Amino acid sequence: MRRPRPALALVAAALVLTSCTSVSGDEPTAAPSTSPAPSSATSSASPSASPTAGEATDDVPEGLAEYYGQEVAWTACGETFECAEITVPLSYDDPGAESITLAAKRLLAAGEKQGSLVINPGGPGSSGIELAEAAPSYFTAELREAYDVVGLDPRGVGDSTPVDCVSDAELDRLRAAEYDLETDEGLRAYQADAQLIADGCASTSGDLVANVDTVSAARDLDVLRHLLGEEELDYLGFSYGTYLGATYAELFPERVGRLVLDGAMDPSLSAHETTLAQAVGFESSLRAYAEDCLAGPDCPLTGSVDDAVGQVRTLLELTGDTPLPTADGRELTASLAFSGIITPLYDDSTWFALTAALDQAINEGDGSQLLFLADLLAGREADGSYPVNTTEANWAVNCLDYPVEGDLARWKAEADELEAAAPTFGPIMGYGAVLCDAWPAQGEAEREPVTAAGAPPIMVVGTTGDPATPYEWSVALADQLESGFLLTYDGGGHTAYGRSNDCVNAAVDRFLLDGVVPEEGATC
Image (cartoon, rainbow, N blue to C red; front, side):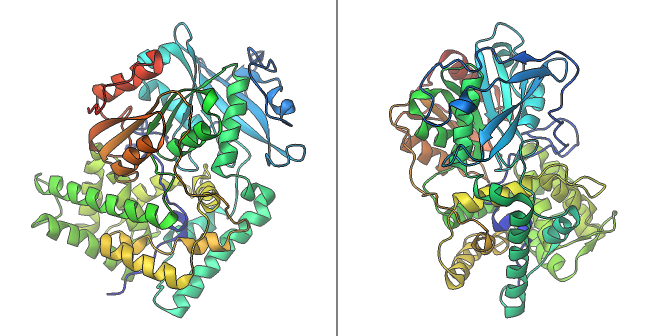
C-alpha cells in the first residue's frame, strides 16, 4: 500500500519539535503549555526601569548603542511576575533601519537574588513567556529562590513581533493534508501548498521572514543580558534552545556565565541528517512504548513488540485511505494521526494517553483522542483558533537555519532512506526541503560544529532515550564545545531537567547556583 506524505504544517520544515506539553490540560509536564501567552500589556502598577539599563557593563557592539542603551520598564503583570518589551534591530546587518519588539516576562526571585536566568523551551517557535509562567511548577524552589527566571519570546514568536503566514482555517487544512508524492499530481499539490505558505509569509510578514534565524536570535539574547544589568548570561535552554544557547556561546564566549543545554541538538548536522536521527528516535520510542503497553492489562495492541508496532503502522496506513471520524466533525487523516501518536512519545509519563487514544481509534474507529493530542502539539484550541504561532515560526526559523541542499531526485532518495531506517514514521517525514525551497528568503547558515573557544564550562544534558533530540546529539555537542561537559540521564522522554529525577535537578541546580561541575561521566 502506498503511503501518503505528511501535512507541511508539522514535518516539512519542523526539524526539531518543541518540548512536550501536558496531555491533561493542566500544568505543563515539559513546557510550555498550549494556552495563549498573555499580552505584554501590564497592570496599572507603576513601571520600574531596568536596574542598570543604559549603563555599559562591557563593550557594546558597534552601531548598537541605541539598543543596548534603551530604557526598559518592567511592570507588574501578576503577583510575582513582571513584563517588559525591548527593541532590537530587524537586521543586525543594518541596525539603523527597521526595528522589532521582543516580549519578556520574569518570575522574580523568591529570596536573595543571585542573578537573572534566561530560559528557552525550544521549538523553534515555542514561547519563553509560557515557560516562565510554568516556572513555579517546573523549576526547583531552590533555583527560583536565587534567580529571576526570565522568559523571552524570540523574534518571530508569540508576543514578540510575530511571523504570520496563513489563516487558522488554512492551517487546519494544511495539517490534515495528504499527498501521494509517488505521482506527479501529488507532487504538484505538495509544491503548490508549499508555495502558498511561502507567499503568505512574504505577504503578511515581509522582511521579518528573512531575519528570524538563530544567529539573530542569539544576538537578541545579548541585548537582553545587557538590559538586565548582567555582565554574563546565565541560561537554561531545552531542545532547540540548546542550539540557540550554543550559538550565543560561539558569538559571545567572553559573556557566557553558566549555560545549561538540555536535550541538545548537534549544530553540525544537515537537515536530512537531523530528520533521519529523529525518525529513528521516534521509532525506538514507539517500540519502548509498545513493550510497556503489552505488559499492562488494557493495551489495545497484541502479540510481540514487532506485531504491536505493525498495528500502529497499519493504523497510519488505514487513516491515509479512510480518515477516522471525530467528535468535533473533523476527520483524522494519517498526517494528524502521526502528530497524535508522537505527542505522548515525548514523555513516558504520558504514555497512558497514547494507550487510550489508540484503543479508541483501533477498537472503536474513533479518532477523537488522537486528534486532541495532535491539536495539543500544534497549539490549536477547541474553537479552531491558534493563539500561538509555533508552526509558522518553526517554518521560518528552520528554513533559514538549514539551507536547502539538492533537488527532487536527491529528496526522493533521502525519503527512501527515511522509510528504510524508520518504517513507521520515516515515510511521513520526507521531502521537508520542498517548503524551504519555496521560502522567500534562502538560508545562509553553515551547518558546522560549535566550539565556543574561551567560554567557561558549559553543561550539556542528554537523555539516553530521547526521541526528538537523540542522546548522541548531546554527546556530540559536549565534545564540540571546548569547555563542554556531559550529564547523562539514563531514561526516556525528551529533555531531563524538571521531568526526570532529583539527581538531574540537583546536578543542574548545583551548576547554576554554585558553578559545581559534576565528575566526568556523571549519570543519573
